[in-house]
Image (cartoon, rainbow, N blue to C red; front, side):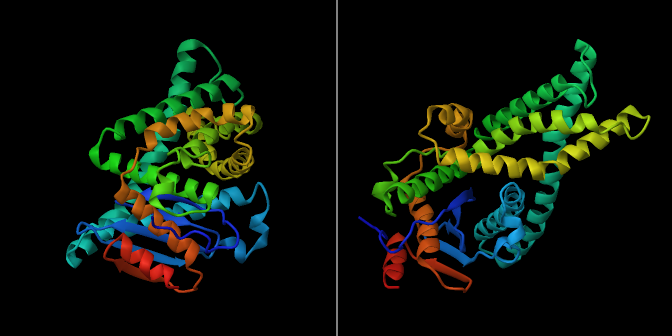
Length: 333
């Protein structure tokens, strides 16, 4: 049995995400991405995690830190995805082309995502309001409820559709490997394949659950804030476009509120009421995660083990011939 247990004095709070053929893990002090190459080797990229909290304590207060963490998570998540995509290309010229296309794809994806998950629900709520006879401005609570329900339907439908693709299934398997590895560490303080396999692939602090809570909290926040913002023009279409932009801006405070709720719920997951609130997000994780194989657990454990073991202030990119090689090198430290 491979184990890197008992090399820390106190268990750190860690999180992560799945990437292309790999896993990203981040602790309070370090960031790491481990990716499986086609030849079976594992490439590890690790570096110190320099959060804005370490420079500006103002951003570390409750109901402020959530929005900052969201922005930092998106930034580092994209860098992790970019690194994993680069590993899939062995030729340097193709890799450079991949960098350019990846950046363009991310920009296009963000724009389309905002249109799809913000613009479409808003437009649908407006059209249904005209057909069903309820108010279609920001003073209508029902308008915000319909808008939120449409968002949830679109989000779940999107997840179900992409889960049918082979490449996405593998990403979801790495997502499961990330959860199982973190569970093994949090519950048993052990990093091993045998221990990770014993734990569930759903986790209460997962980003999937976070998104569901964001939508629910946004319904309430929009209902209390937007009614106090009067129409800025006499043009109905322009007013609704302005309101959509405001909804995008309000994502930051909504993320901050949701983060605090997730943090509170995550520490009380054994409570029946909390489990009831968390249930929709946990249920959805059975789609966004799949049972990983041992090779995928190995990759997740390499990322997790390196984050916990490595306390240096250096950025490193190391290629391990296999899983055994990683444990031999890190146990010597």
